[in-house]
Image (cartoon, rainbow, N blue to C red; front, side, top):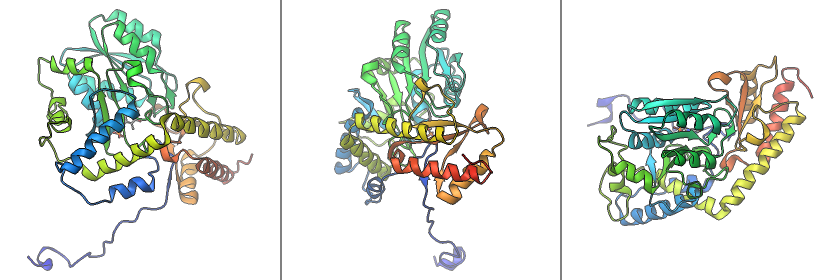
Length: 388
Ligand SMILES: *Cc1c(COP(=O)(O)O)cnc(C)c1O
């Protein structure tokens, strides 16, 4: 068929898209290193090609390092972090199951949505936005609901900048015969995550936060207890795509049957990003996030800007900056983007208009970014007549 039979000739005014130069300092995606971008630009091979399958095995091993686990069931689900979350809930919750859901921000709210849609009976433990999950309240909920079978919570609440220590919560869940599902989307690579040390049963993360990869993949890890729970289900998983048994048909070594076409080039990128994390070392990465956060916090103080979260619960990779009274917060964000190419995030939900979310995630967590952001904030505030 000739070109003219289907429409105007050639590009018809369209050209290739060239993204603007940006420094990504919002709640994700974060900056992606050249090496990861270069890896993704390599030729696509078949997703069952022996060379690709060998790469998949390495990828699982590298993910075990990032999660600090020896779980055999550790692999990236094809889909963003939300799909990792859903993979955990659709496999671990059956209709009628009681699930304790901790909600101290947007993402705990999403867990609740998941539980409800799986037919689970949620018991919600609410905490203030900006505060960590309260151990006492969870214990109270578990005592009141001895039939509960699962506890879900978010380690790094990206919507509020609060960090919850998973270790005591996982122990508490186990003491009440519950499995623990941990959202570590923004945690992995930025703050210590020790899946085996905690004994967490199912944990998911995302590629575009502290792993410095483009968005679109969600690594998950399931421990033995979680796998046993999935195998003991009396009803089929409500999702065909996220059914763990079917996913493992492709990801388990020695199996490799077609389930869906894996996002081959995206997986090259994740492999490279995890390789870079391994080269740097997890402890060094955590320390870099901590150091740059302290640098930013000190600079913000000089600008007369405060952080929302109490010091001991702050996430180094997500800084919730309180917008001063009378400042047009949207204008400040626009100034940063237009004058300095820096993207920061707005507040979500209850915090909309009240905070800026300044991310120092993964490759974006660098000293020069902290300096550039502080200088741009100073200029943006000065443009509104606020000099310090
Ligand atoms: C970003 C995020 C998600 C969702 O990830 P998407 O890739 O946007 O689907 C889930 N939980 C937390 C804590 C997040 O920060």
